Amino acid sequence: MSLIVATPWRRWLAGVTLTLAAAWPLGATAATPVPPEVAARAYLLYDVTTNQVLAAKDPDAAVEPASLTKLMTAYLVFDALRAKKLTLEQTLPVSERAWKMPGSRMFIDPKMQVPVEDLLKGMIVQSGNDATVALAEGVGGTVERFVELMNQQARALGMTQTTYRNPEGLTAPGHTTTARDLSVLASRLMKDFPEYVPYYAIQRYRYPGTPAANDTNRNLLLFRDPTVDGLKTGFTNAAGYCLVATARRQFPALGEGPAGQRRLVSVVLGAANENARAAESQKLLNWGFSAYETVRLFAPGQPVATPEVWKGQASRVKIGRPEGVLVSVPAGQASSLRTEVLRADPLVAPLQQGQPLGTLRVSTATGEPVAEVPLFVLETVGEAGLLGRIWGAIRLWIK
Image (cartoon, rainbow, N blue to C red; front, side):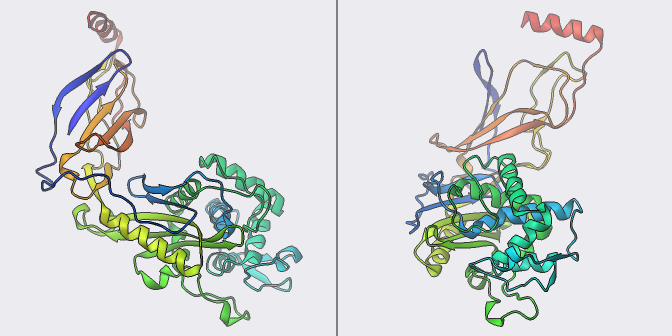
C-alpha cells in the first residue's frame, strides 16, 4: 500500500510503502464483482462492518416503504426507553384509533393495558399496525406529534430522501423513502440500540388471548438461514413485497467471537411475492459474503500516519481510528490494495483527540475505488510554549 498526502498547495508522494503480503497471501487481481440479477424494483446491499455499499439498483429512487416504516417507529421507541421516558414493563392504553387500524394487527383492543415490551413484539414480529399506533401515542402523545418526531429523526440520521406521513406504513401521499435511506436507518438502529436487536430475530409471538394463527414472523429468512437475525418485512399493493434483512457470519481471518464477524444488510423493494423477497434477499446476502472479503488494514488505535506538526508540544501527531480500519474488497484482492492519506498541510497545534484530520482512500491495484475512511487525531498534541511557537513559526516560514 502506498500512502499519499494531499495538501491544498501541492500533492506529494510520501516516502512510505506498506505491504499486506505478510498478513494475507498473494492473490490475482480481479474486476469488481458483478452482483446477481435481483428481481425487485430497487435494492441495496450494505456492509455494516465497513460502512460500504457493495451493490445497488436504483438506490435513490422514491418508493413506498410499507411496514419498513416501523423501523423508524422502533428507533424512536428504543430511544425513549434509553432516555427512561418509557420502560419495557410499563403498560400503555389501546386507543380507539389503534384498535381500528386496518392491515396487519396484533389484535389488541381498548379494554387492554398492554406492556411496552409486548407492543414492541407485536409491532416487530406481527407487524401490528394497532401496536404501532399504541406505541406512537405512548411516545409522542399523539400520532401527529410522533410523525413529526419521525421526520426530525430522519433528518438527523441523514435520510434526506425520506418523508413520513404515519408510523405504520399504510399508503399515504408523500410517504416515501429510498433503498439507501433504509440502509442508513437499519444500520444505525443496530449500532445505536444493539440491546434491542434480538427482538428482530423472534420467530413467533402472540399476546395472550389473541389468535394463535397470527404468531409467525413474516421474515422467512429467520426460518431458513441461522445467520439471519432481522429485520423487517413490508407489503402494500403500491410498494410490493419488501424486506430489509441482515445477517452476520464468522470470518476467522478477522479473529474470534464478535470481532471476527461481518454483518451485511440487504434492502429489497418491490418483489413479486413473499417467497421472492426472501429468495432475492438471500441471494444478495450470500453473494456479498462470498464475493467480498473484509480486511483489517489497521488495528484499533494503530496510527495510519504520523505527520509532522508545527508549533506543538510534540513534533508529530498520530492519526487513525480508535476502532481500527476495516474494508471489504473483492475476494482475492487483499494483497494488492493501495491507500492514500489525504489531509491538509501544514498541521498546526493544538490538535485535539477525536478531531477529524483527513481521509484514508483505499483502491485496488487497478485504481478502482474501494472505500474512503475518515481519520481522527488519536492523541492530543498541545500548543507549544511561546518560544516553541516562535521557533515553529520561523521553521514554517523557511519551509
